[in-house]
Length: 343
Image 1 (cartoon, helix red, strand yellow):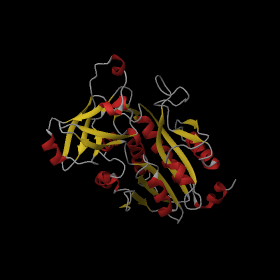
Image 2 (cartoon, rainbow, N blue to C red):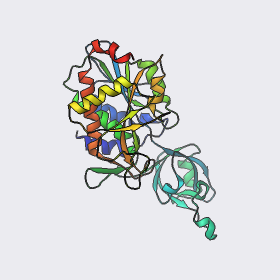
Image 3 (cartoon, one colour):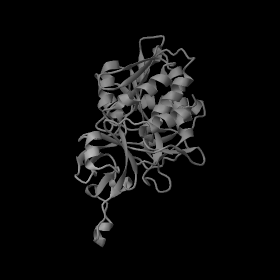
Image 4 (cartoon, rainbow, N blue to C red):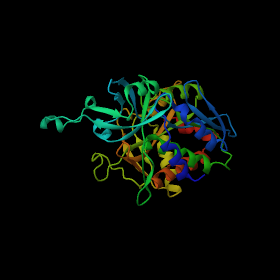
């Protein structure tokens, strides 16, 4: 399967925090040629590629996406909801899927007001979901607490730019797919564990679990970061299409960081750097301090319009992230680990 086809399939799928198992069949179908696949009790998905030694490297990308949950079904047949990680302004007029006893499609509407002052304010309490069903039919299909996810088909834009929902963090799973494919015929020194982690959006919880279960020598988190281009985060220099972003800061082991930068230079893989002086807000934060301490790297893929239904990523950044990780892994050997880990 081509990486773009895989990206489309996985982005258009639905897996809110706590229901990462909804992705399992897609992961199994596409990663089974790379290694042995298992799922943990709480929905971490592991792909294990055996190496020549007992040393382990873990590559992690979270599988969950931001979501809504049913909070109330009104007598008029409208659904009120709670949101996780989504700005209410970005929800207006969006298509959604309510995952009830069967999937129910709906649209997010903004309750009209006749006060000019209030018309300029979009608050969550003014939003509701319209399905077209009356309350009796709706109550047979939907219950309080059901998940709601954004609905969006992938769009291919110009210059290798791709738009869809849940690019955060399915772009990173696609980068793992590229990495695994690059390593398919490589007999690496280290055992490689590819991890689709659960519940990152609600506190990096899967990262903790996976780190204690696998106890890797090296842990690499792949996530997305904010684009710093036009209309992006002006405090950052990240640009779409200019390569993976290598994090610098206390969450990242300095010798491993220098090593992966040298790998990028050696293979002419474009990359960018980003300074994070504190909590990176990613799985890397929890990997680093788990199981007595794990040498950690954070590689990010720049995207635009994070946590909306129109997130944008550049396909070249996904491919270069996967290639960089593959070259890094294939060059690692057991004998150099001790020297890499000491300061």
